[in-house]
Length: 200
Image (cartoon, rainbow, N blue to C red):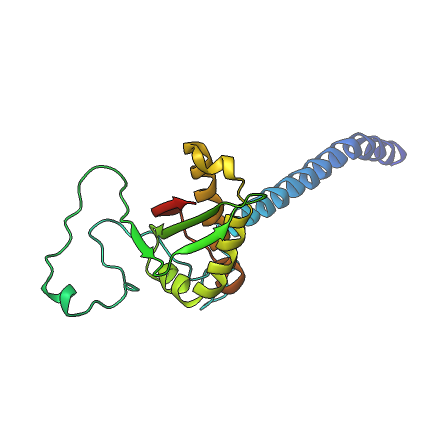
């Protein structure tokens, strides 16, 4: 009987390392599965597949409007618009249609460190839906003020070069977008265009 007990103890002693190895493998496997699951969950959350409450949607920001597509926020046209032929877009160029907003009044300002005056007629453009131009119209007073500041900050020598005029146009577009972002949370103006340009 003593020999049988001794053999059982030797057998148990030999099985102990095997049992520890199996337990270690199970623990490592469980940790790896948990890590993979957490990584997959994070990936799904980051992709927006999970984590959004029902009824909670992404912000409703102005979207690009394709050529030929109806703009649900387009301004209502008058009698002249009813009689006009529909716009036919070309097949080349941008896939999005461009809308313009012309400021009714001219902008007149002095130039930086100069007795010269600049007078410009301006328009802004966007490829986004009509909300952007509605916001430009609604906040025109603040936008005009910001644009006049940019005109007054322009050195006289800059306005006589193509590069200087382009830089001014870019600064004016940024000024409009800054006002729109402050007021509406979104800019959307892509360019400012000169309709007339006079320096005296």
